[in-house]
Picture 1 (cartoon, rainbow, N blue to C red):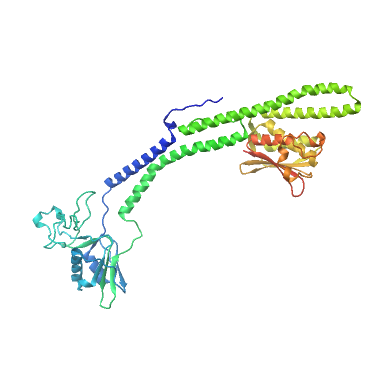
Picture 2: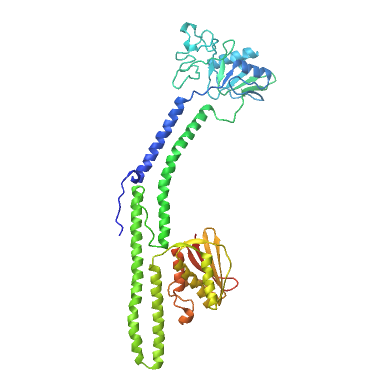
Length: 495
């Protein structure tokens, strides 16, 4: 009897604990990767569009390639674009643009998708915040009357103009751009429309790009790195979770063929070990149940021989006409007992598996049948080697060939491969079997032949042995009526 086994170790932790640990490790790893990317990569470079570049695109009416951004496109619209309500900085930018273009500022509309971000260019190669307070620009375009970029409300302070930061958490600073003089510019996407004299609108905007922004690329990078780091852990966990399930499926399939199959190995989580231990105990109980029933049938068959022997002696005193009938019945009972004993002996005999070639085995059985006068032939087929019990497989094939010769007069046999199955087919020229009985004939002691003559009907264990041997090898045996007449026995064995 298999006793419950308790296995200790890190791999035997409950499945709940393992799943919770995987989730925690995954979250921590993803956060560490995100932090590493954020603190080790430089800030994303902004896309900058200078006032002079915008003026050049509008005046030239053609595409202009800015120094630090996407190409500026010119389009013609019949109607105005959606413009934002002007604040002081947008009004100043529109005034500067109108002055360069020689138009009324009221004829200019601006739409900035990411918010108003105007910057003033310092002429020297120094950040505005690094200048002494008295030398800092005093307005949004570098002129007097502006705000201190280091104070709230100023170009670099909260509520004022914002600039690309030097690093994460650093105060915003006005960018340094190459140019002969201070020049306002815009960062990010925008649309700017000028109302022409003919009533149409000229729109300038950065060329749409089918690509990810820098910050989106970094998010994707974090996602990809997290997946690469976490995937091995998830793969190992999935293997640990699915492995025992596959093992259970294989063990259940083996148990259906052979109750004496090897028990499951006790490893894995605590739940898996408990389930495997319960499965092994169930298999052991089924094995004992089958063996007990088989041994009981064998014992009953063996014990019946003694009263039959006494009956054989006692019928010597009865009249001759009655004695012949009683002797015939006793002979039939002894034949059934002998067949039952052989069936029990074969099913309880330990299987001795070895590598054997099916076509050669079938040819030898057909040759033996032909030598005794049977009309038996075999088609030359491919060589298929399987692991099997030679004695049991020989009996399987012999029973099928003998049945075909007895009920069909002649047999034709063949072996071929179908995928990972070795298929043996034995055809006869008999009348076939009623479709309703094609499966019942495999039951022990069932005889499709209606007479009770054991010379024509047999005992009824031949096909039961055939199916028992085939299923013990992981395959199956079936019967089919042939369209042209006769019966076909088909045996499938894995290899």
